[in-house]
Image (cartoon, rainbow, N blue to C red; front, side, top):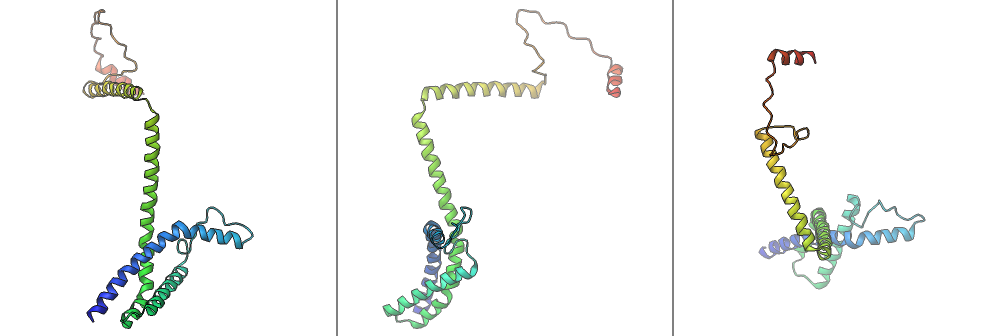
Length: 198
């Protein structure tokens, strides 16, 4: 009994991983083969917006049929090989289909990870080419000038927070010209009248 349990557990795990592998194979190769078969057997070629494989983009019935065919083929192979535990093989034949479909579902996000990895590697290759084509001395000068510009902006922002002034209308005061006297304070009543009129 223990060997049956071990056999079923290992086979169940293998069925899930086999489903994941079948999904990956279908996305990489099955989609192209399905498009080729469709284009050979139909008058009008399949539109580029339609992407379907034997598993990907198919209904549950089609996915279940694929999983059933694979499970039956595996059962036949095990019978041919002469596996001794017939009860475990029959149990696995029954639960292989749902386990493979679970593997198909797990395979979808894994395929997304592989596609993102390809995009990341492609962008890293482009960056490597750009680095080889750039002149480091000009890039260094650009970085230094942008850093000094950022420092001036940060300093202006700091003083604007402490003592806000309108920098667009303010004119720089030359150091040799004496500063003008402070403007007269406006009458608060006049400011109130101006505020209530507008």
